[in-house]
Image 1 (cartoon, rainbow, N blue to C red):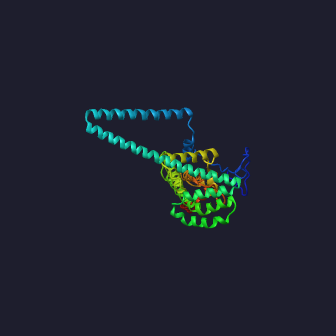
Image 2 (image 1 turned 90 degrees about the vertical axis):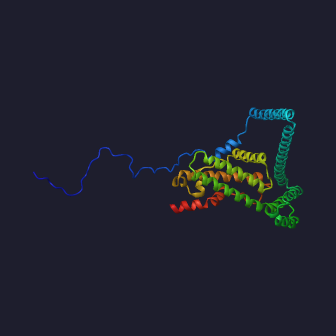
Image 3 (image 1 turned 180 degrees about the vertical axis):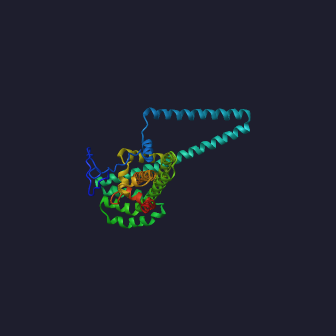
Length: 337
């Protein structure tokens, strides 16, 4: 029996029609996976954490006991050596004395560094008080001390001359301090911004290109410590080892207290488009986040180390610093797309 050929459309009845079809389904939400805290966030939180009173007393007593035992051991060693062999004993005594002199010199250097840092901090607070009280006399006193701090800086010679020529024309506290800010601190601000950009670029590059565990934490820690020390030196608060740690701890404590250390994809989206973390590799995204955090640490260091608060001069923008620091990286990513 031959088959009957039918032409035309064929209707097929489906019993179960899905309620949701590709045409009426909701769009897939552009949700980025939660990221783990960036390296600089962990570094800042660890460094800014205030030790307990018990921990402080533990380290103080441990240090005192160590110095006491070391001193007694050195004394017994030298005394016993003198009794056995006077020549070698007195040679050891001379070496020990020289070592103690070096330790005293280091201690004096650290004390001098703390004095410089305190001087900068005192100027900063005095300027804030002068502005709050609109005290012209106090403002001029601040600028005189500021000129004394920078009297040996050759790169500020032109600024000192400009300030000396124009300060008599200003009769309000805010104007006097702004004139000093523009003529004396503007070149230092530019140098500090360059240091921040270099550190942000270094941290971002190491994080993106080095796939080793804890490499980003080590790079962030070393780069930020060096950046903070350089910024302190630029503004005249050259510090020693303990002084550098004091400045670093002050900066990171300020960041954690204000919540400024918690930077994430919102800042990255502002800089490079909302979906940047989904368009590029995970390591590159982490590098940009760490670079942005380094920039925030740099801006905080500028605020802490600057002898004057920001008045009419604009505080550096974190997004602007990161854009300038990572211009080549963003250009390459856009070209690859």
